[in-house]
Length: 119
Image: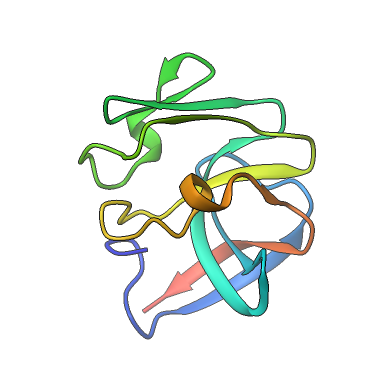
């Protein structure tokens, strides 16, 4: 989640069923419940996410304000976010692909919205 969060930062989260677009969330990896992930929500239930030629689009609108690093987002793809799901990206999306680009939309169940990142 660099540059927003750094190694060793402490997070305080609030359990929620409805994270909002733009918020940082913590949730367990879909196939490794003992491994927690920290990502930014770029879309919620009912949204359509597309990555086309490096541009992130949500519901046919370019969404550069949701990406901390303005480098092109890869790979191209299209995802429909279902009810009680969210599409998440790492702020350092160019360094990782372990987010909804490879996992698909993830469940909002048992996710925590980060309310206070502290260095």
